[in-house]
Each structure stands twice: as C-alpha cells, then as structure tokens.
Length: 424
Image (cartoon, rainbow, N blue to C red):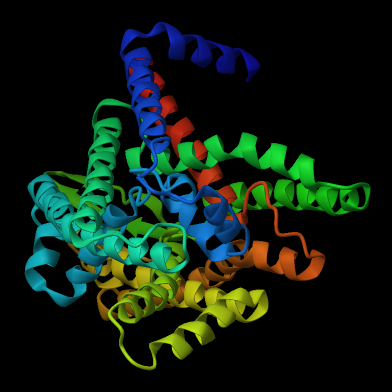
C-alpha cells in the first residue's frame, strides 16, 4: 500500500500534464489571495474587527467569501453571488419546464446553457448583495457615508471583484484540478488559520487551556465524522433481467444504486445563511431610506441574532428543512424509476414503475434524515461551544471543517483519477 502511494506521489510531480494543472491551481489561488488583500476605500479597521468579534453570523458569511469579507477587500462578496445564482437556477428546474429540460435532457449543451444562465444571474445578485452589505457596514460605522457617485463606484468595485473571482474559479475547474469555486473557499479558510492561531494564543490564559484542548479534540472528532459521513451511502440492489441476444441468452447482471447520506453537501448551509442574512440586509436598506418603524424591528432582530441559543436553534431547523428541499431538487426518484425500467433493470422485490418510485423516495427520505441532522449539528457546533464554554474565538468552525475536509477528499479523488488515466 505504501509503495502504491509513493508511486502515485512521484507520478503527480513528474507527469507534465498533472504538474501543469497543479501549477494553474496554485497560480489562480495566489492571484485570488493578492486581490483579497486589497481593501475598498475608507474602512475603519478597528470597528470592523470589533464587529466581526461580536457577530458569529458574519464569521460564517466570511467563509463563503473566501476570507475577503473580514478585510472588506475588493473580493468581499467572494463567490457567494455565483453560488446563490446556481442555487436559484436549480430551484428553477422545478418551477420552469424549459430550465428542467435544458438541465436534464439536452446533455452537455444543456449544461453549458445552464451555466451561462447562472453567470448572467450572478451580475444582478452581486450588485444587490453589494448594495446591501455596503449599507449595512455604513450603518455599523465601519464605512463612511458616501455620496451617490462614490457609493455606486464601491458597488461596482465589489460586484466586479465577485464576477472576476467567479471567472478565476471557472479557469481552475477547466484547466486545473478540482472544483474552482470550492477551492477558492478552501483557500480563504486555510489562509485565515495563521492569524486565527496567533490571536487565540495571544488572548489565551492558563485557565483556557482545558477548553482549547477540548476544542481541539472536538475538531479532530468532527474531521473523522465528516470523512465517514461524506463517503457513507445506502446501496439499493439492482438486478437486470435476462435478455435474448440472437441465438444466445444473456445472463442478467446485478449491481446497486448508491444513495449518499450527504446528498446535498454544504448547499443547505448556504441556503440557511442566505435566508438569515436577508432580513438583516433588507432592514438596513429600509432604515437607510428612512422607513418608519424599521429601527425597532432591526434592533429586535439584532438582539435575536446575538443570542447563540435562539439563533442556533433556528439555524439548525433551517439546515434540516433545506437539506430535504435540495435533495428533492437534485434527486428525482421518478426519473430513476423510468431509467431503470427503460434499461430492463429492477429492484428485487419491488414492482417497476410507480412502486419503484415510491420505494426509492421512501429510502431517500429515511437516509436524508441522519445526514440532515449531522449537517445541522456541524453548522451550529460553534454556537453550542460558545454557549457552553463562553469562548468566542474559534480557529475554525464546524462549517469550515466540513468544507475543508470535503474539498480535500474531492481533490484527492480528482488527482487519483488523473494518475489512473496516465497509468492506463
């Protein structure tokens, strides 16, 4: 086993094609980190640090910005607008038959069209999110109140930065290894670790050592759990009927249909974060234009978000709901039933057609529940630890751990696939 690992490791760095792809990834991520260090004009860094220290929710949003939000860089929106656009397009496959036909039935051309629509939708979403964030930050005293022309320039700057970063992510996907958007988020999380470690060591006291050791043990346990659950699946047995091929009778084969526990990945967390952020952004925009009664509602919502138990409970429930919702979008038991019937396959003991659809749907619902609960616990782990220990300084949260582990697993599989291709 160790000899195989060494051979693959050697091939990774000696094969010109794999080496070129790795170089593309490194160069693109270095370009992203360079841009993420350029702040927009007029930032009050002391007020910004205080705001992030007292707002765990903004720390979670910073994960999906690739670390740019914490410094209010030109990349402060990160790839979040593109992710939200992709989610909206996937939801549109349920509402609009034309979108569903393009995504599922037109093959590679349909996928290309679907991605192009997502890119176009990214532009208005980036502008809207830029306006909401900048108004929110102005109301918090982090940014100065600017005139219309200067404010519009900042909106164009952060929206353009998000679209540029989306393009960089697509370059990584096409010419590098792995998913570009995931790698950008991964790079932002990893880049924040040195400063987080140094800050945690600076503020730590002798009485905090047991808490930090406990947090380290929990982190290792979460990593192990994520690795196990990410690869866990429920295998439905599939059998093929015997078929006549000329004068010979072909024996039916047997295989299985894998149903993953974490079918939705981290998308439900993004759904939940977007929904929880929407009221805060909307209230900030309404208060900026002087709508009566908004200030009291905004203060109530701010106090609700500040309570880790209330906010964590709502966050947990939303993650579970969106896990089922996204699984229903991406996993279609009816289509699976039709495909099995067309290929002459069936689930032993289950009649083809509607009975197979109902059976697969029931299995998916049962399998999704433990995955949804696990995803919810991962999402609210920082709030639970904060409520129990009072520690607000985390080296890396549960959501960040989930993303890091899943990206590393995916990257290893992609590299292994490239190596296997070269060996063959």
